[in-house]
Length: 525
Image (cartoon, rainbow, N blue to C red; front, side, top):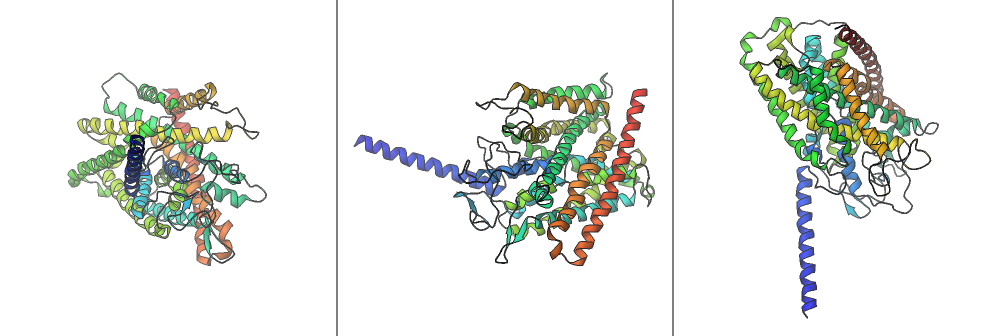
């Protein structure tokens, strides 16, 4: 009798514990967060804004992976080139219209998937396109005047449109004429466009673009950390390069990261702190409204430097890489278009106002990082917060880049170029740790030899930002859905591809020339 009583009490306790955990997980899911698991448990709302074409895609892959059974019999192997950030996430997800999924709140393998609302999805997109690199937008106005403001609006419109057509490429009509989701990622869309002759070429191109953008984002964080610290304490006998080395020493433990669980706890705080910093900068600018230099804002273009501004502005809107995962995890995917509209309208208004107000305050003295224009006492406080934010944001793109590299080059099997980075017990092998340390050192070397925030940002935006946001979505849309497109849609896609190509090439060439010139100047000094 006692044994039976103990058994019942144990069952009741277990049931209550499970229900409690389920309620907590459900509460966090409704708020846009995800409870920590033994794998990557980093919620979208916790993530920083920039590292995110990549960054946010990293988080939504977690949501999709949680509902997957690992090692199902008969499951199709992952397509080569379709790389997910999550290690051990199992086989790819079945299409949305498949029999394995039920409705908008569908199930995979019998497990409920946490879904997010349109507001939560909008918060994630806002994090992606409203971030730390907004600090470089006033510098873009410096070299473009009112045309720079027009470009901020134009980039918002185009990125909103290409985000929508990219999602359209995920869907096809089945035999019954119903529109179903047959793809789940940017890589899957790219592979479908290159099939059947080159079934993995598109995915490889997208992955290379991801790696470049992720690594360049890491470099930018090191550059901005050194720049901010140097300008905050000009009286100290420490150069900008030395500050970059100190920042990298703090970041070196990132090489030992197995997941981002610890870092994720600070990400939401960092994002909120950044909004507070933006408000402080705008408040200071408004306090000097009487001295605003309206006559300095003109319709002109600095032919040599304005193309660099194009890359800066495009880079600040980059979010396409994670949109397929985000849309697939919405409770109501039909609300995706509306969500994209209001998030990009809000971003356009806030970015335009921030860039214009800051430029009017300092005019020709506007610096690459606008906080460097603040008075010494305010600048030191604001910059220290920004440095802390940059250092805490660095692990997100770094870990994502490592995941892509490891899955591309260091997996087990005949297709791998090198041995696996992990042993049978899950421990990181020596060459895996060497790869990670080398990547940290590489970001430091780039930050030391090319310590130019705006030029690096312009180069990245022109090379990968324009490609992922302008060129590839319009090309994929024409390739996969050209039979169903109306004439004006074809015109828009072709126009975006041509304009994006011109802006990309022009911005890349001028940014590269600027970097070479800056490198020569540093070498002479």
